[in-house]
Length: 266
Length: 260
Image (tube, rainbow over all chains, first blue to last red):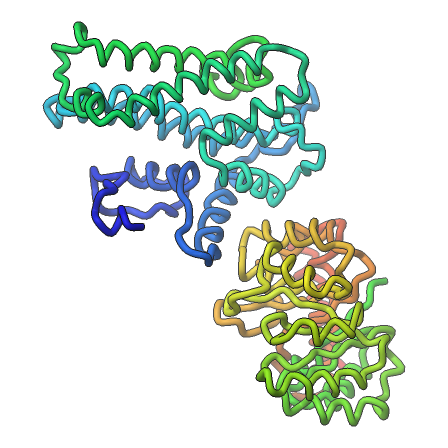
């Protein structure tokens, strides 16, 4: 709160000043509305002790995503498997991620490359984590992934599952996934992938926490980045993080592999 | 067949005798005697032994919804005169000293609250009350839960957490300012989404405000039956019957009412 009062926290969606986070998903609200709505789900926290308004808005948004997803919770006519993954929600998370990527390219032009290096690293690590944790939240609705034996095929149970999971921070969501997998699998895959992912993220936090390196990256011009040692270090940790995330979702040993191919890609 | 009936104050505001008289000519098998306003409690307590409640298999009493800490002992003394078989429904925010209420044990049923209240709405807040009054049962108010969370997710959570504590239900329509009305189709639909989790044996008490107060008694009784039928459909674990059937049944009921 003190940081907000002192104006040290920047507007998360500063490109425009209108729109509402709880506009219906899928409406023609534009990038700002999508961004606000998705950020409310993925990283917002209520301030104060009375959580009613926050919970009502969040539950209401989730209900729209679930109720208007026609095939959700239905069994496939091919293999009788129930679809637990909310695709409407997943597609909006994906839209947000792609919007951010397009916006990044746009800002390069709009801001004359100012802050390019730092934004590039943040997009590849912290923003990638945020999207990944959203994708994971959608897959977490499948009891085979969450290992939740009490999961019931109704909207309220899915909202409860999503709210509980989304109430964690993005890092905690990923950590919970690995903890559950490590407890229920003999494979070394979850442990090794978790170590790679969290080590890379730890390096990233260490770098951003270094005021000199952060300032250096913020002021680095694109033409100088190739020879720049700080950028090289940042780029290496970004690559490590990307490979760990890719492994988490796409490795054939990952329980997320099938969902990632079927629902995340095609 | 589940027990169903009305809160007397919903049928006839401030007059439980007239409300009971109205229910006497109906198929209602449960009732809740309202003493929501503090001054109604001594009147109700003194009348209680003489009331004809033969038609009801279940009767509860709603404690006053507002009293000061100084008035709390007097309220408790009056409520102690209620037979143990009659549950006492209480709003948690009215309780000043929880320890004083522990003696009621499982006769006390704590009700989940609406949005106007600052406590007792969701699972976590209710848990704190049941920690202080561990033997207390619960009155699950579907309208309050629906008003707090239109998605019924909190209602779902309450049922998962407190299913075994539920002593009775409150059913009605509630607007955003906390006023009770007859059930709307939207509320019925919302209630039906969690109906499979509601304990089948829990008596259903309707708080739908009787819109026909002062009209012909037979007409009021038809409305009572119809509203009770709508409530039963809303909490039928097999799911709600289709709109077409509801309309058809209503049309039949209306024609019966006016030919009576």
